[in-house]
Image 1 (cartoon, rainbow, N blue to C red):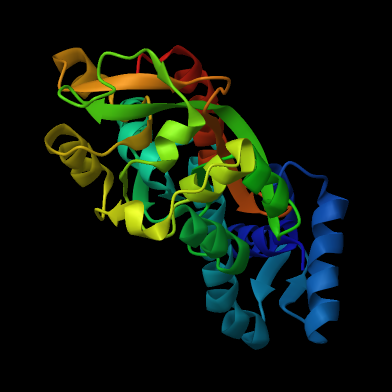
Image 2 (spheres, helix red, strand yellow):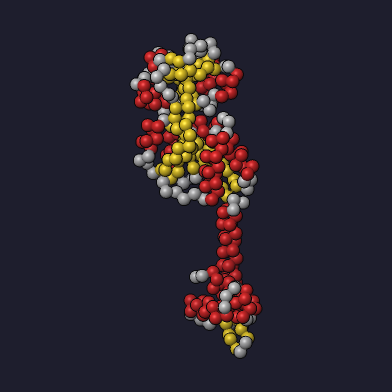
Length: 304
C-alpha cells in the first residue's frame, strides 16, 4: 500500500473535498480520486459518500480512519528516524577490538568522533584478537572489529565469513628494561631470543607463531611467562631480566621516560597489520560509515 494513498485519504476526510486534498498532496484531483478508489478496492467497500460536491466518510470509512492515522504517524516517525540517522544527528556504533588498537588507538579516535558527532552513541569493547574475529564472523553484536595481526595470519582469515580492510602498519619492537643485558645494544640476533625469558600478555597471542613463521625462532614454553595484559608486560620488562615484543603504539610513554629500551632484530622488520574486520558483505549504517571514514583520516594524521 502506497503511503501517498493513505495520506490522500486523510486529506479528503479532513477537508471533505477532493480539490483541497489534491492541493495538499501536490497532485491532480483525478489522481486524488484514483487513490481513494484504489483504497476502496483494497478494502472492498465504499469509504466515502459523494453527494454532489459534498464528500463524507461512510461508517466503514470512520472505522478505518484511526488506523490509517496511526499508520501514517508511524511512517512519518520512521522517516524522521531514518533522516536523523542519515544526517548523523542520531545513531549507534559498536566496536570490538584487540588489545593494541583497542587500548592505544581507538580511544583517541572515539573522543574526536564524539566531539564532531555528539548525538551518535559509540561503545567499544576489548578482547583477544581471536575472540574479535570469531565475534564478527559468527555473531551480530558489533558493527566493526579492529585487530592487529601478522600478515600471514590475516591471509588465513580471508577464507572466513569476514571482510578485511588494512588500516595501517603496526610496527613492533623488542623491549627490555634499562638494566637488561641488551639495553645498550641496537640490535640482537634470532638466537638471542631463544635463550631468554619472554613476557606475553596472553596465552593466545600470535607473537609466538609470528616469530617462528618469520625467523624460525622457537620460544620454548618454559621460557614464556603470561602476564595477563599489556600493562603487566611492560612492568615485568622494567623489573625483570626478560624481554617482550610490543607495538610501538603501546610503548611511546615508557620509551620517552627511558624506563624501557626498544631493540631491533638483525635481518628482520618486525611488524603487524592493523585492520578493520566486518561480517562479509555487511551493509554499514550512515553512522558506521562515517566512523569508518573518519578512522582512516585520523589514523593518517594522529600523533600516537
